[in-house]
Length: 314
Ligand code: ADP
Ligand code: TRP
Image (cartoon, rainbow, N blue to C red; front, side):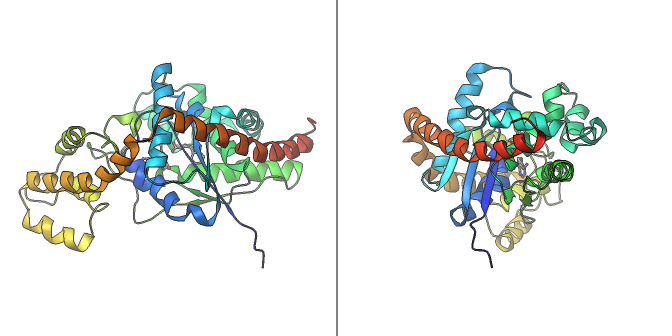
């Protein structure tokens, strides 16, 4: 039996402040297992450019997201934390993988179709986004990618691109597996749609008490008398379902009380992490990113060299 340590990688876009969907969908599953793997955690800043056009926000969000990674307990000595744009290998492999897939194939991507349906600008970056993500993953010979349910298709797309490449040029790239927690699913935002930085419907992970209050109080609820499913779906991330069911039964018809309890539960969870986060400086973050960039490059450059050789650009 092989005793080779497997590789784990995930990425989050610094397109806004992290929300509880990001935490429970991607960060927490990563946090729970990363010490058993050779782990990589990326700040997907080139991906964020598909929706964010404000340099100051991009800079600030990038520092903030790394601060969030550290505050939730990730140890930078045990995981390579790096910024996508610090390693141009991602750009080069993305181009190569773009040449492996067709336009109709990318047109079928849910994330692309969802953004079109919401009348967000369909820029070409958004269109080829899955191949940049595929390159993020395969450059590190990743075995497992912890992500939220909405990202399942992107990992399938990665496997497609890998398959096409390997069939064309010989076995070169490793096909990854997604790791998606069924118990988490897609966490709804305050409007009942998928919680997302791009949809302005989030409960911020490290929001102030009043931001959290405002977000929770604005969660849309169904007609009176029923269980407020949108509130419940978020609440069950913070409390045992058994206990919650009876609380929600008692609170039937009084949505405000359930929302207030949810606010208190979020506060209880986040306040120690918030305190830890306040002690992390920009300098600490820059140090982590600098060392992460070097480690990331030393791995990706080897993969890229084999790819270049396989395609005849060496
Ligand atoms: P956003 O949609 O807010 O921009 P990202 O696309 O940066 O978030 O997602 C980062 C990670 O968080 C991904 O693994 C994604 O699947 C997960 N994630 C984002 N939103 C949710 C959600 N509402 N429920 C579960 N997981 C989510
Ligand atoms: N597309 C992912 C998202 O929106 C972010 C991402 C970029 C990613 N590169 C990645 C996730 C590589 C996992 C692996 O959530």
